[in-house]
Length: 268
Image (cartoon, helix red, strand yellow):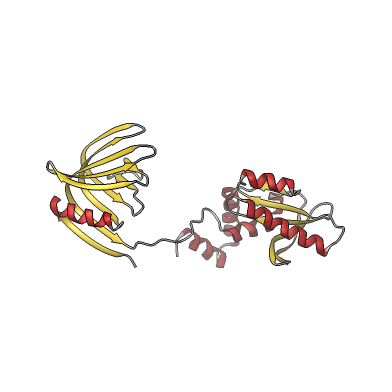
């Protein structure tokens, strides 16, 4: 669990001490403060005094938010160094990047509230639209998204030392192995598909077996390898599949699938 400390109406001297310690420990800092901001780097900007939300993340990212809008008005990606200095009636937080050279300076005139959080952990996978199993299941119900005339025989068919995502036959009756990836497919995905195709060929001597890699995108070197092995690539559109998924749930009228969607959307 994260360890959190809360401060309110901190004098600048105290804020200097707290911020210095927090940054040295790579803690997360969130401050409501009155500040001015200067930036020099790929461009140049000046922001006058105002009450803003200042965020410093453990990886060195710095964000300055105004009271309205979701985008920061100033920000700095991962920084080489962040320091705080007290002087001239202000507390200066200075963030520096080397490549490209960028300097973000936040001049803090008062601190209304300050949160310092250590050991903040978030290792959850970010899933946009659908997870891989959901993508697989939609394609299994709608193989025309991959190719007209495909007929699905089985999902998760055991083959050799693994499981084929979707096992089909095409219009000519040839077995088709479909390997599904919900993110950019790389070399390992190609080799995985090749292993499955070879395994099916070994079980069916003399039969032509096709292999299709279905993914939103594929790395250039992976595509070269795929073609050299006589395999095929089909681009899938996660947004389109998600719309189809939601449409199917509405037609079903709820049940466990609706609860799955609510869970996916963060609704419980």
